Length: 202
Image (cartoon, rainbow, N blue to C red; front, side, top):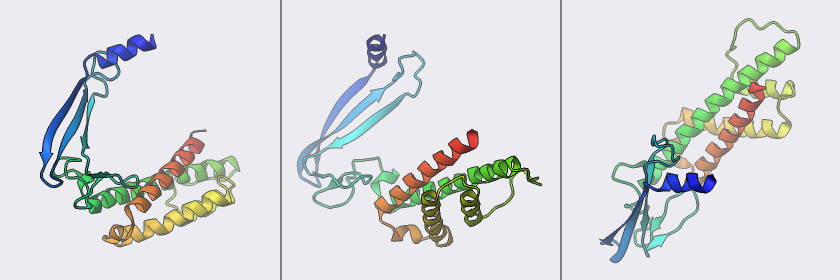
């Protein structure tokens, strides 16, 4: 059954290798395009998408999450995305990661509030409003005091608070961070969001 499903999901795929001469590196390169019109094989095109990846002998592979650089310019390969794509510019990538990070912090506040209310009600306290406007700093202290999180999670959340404050109070602050640092902050905030979401759903 799995083999049959896999075969069906791939029968409409289009794979194309597009060669071109890169003037920057003065080398033959190509764009590898893989179009998946029906990746689930359900005949409805559910989650249809495509991949386009440059291949070049002058590529410089750098540390994740940064896209490949050009060995000649030491900048992001211009063929990584069309003009205007955020992946082409390091500063824009930093801005995107910083926005994602701040967004995850808002989820931490939301689920943190829910957990605090549920815990207080379970202990017999009457909560006047559905979602009290607790500040982030108060939320993490209450989560620790109510034994919803441990000291390690508290320290992580507190560190994220300091980074969040820097980013939201200084519009250009994201430029001060390394790209990888912003990516890792976003990943850490996402994991803690998932942890609080799971706790609040129980």
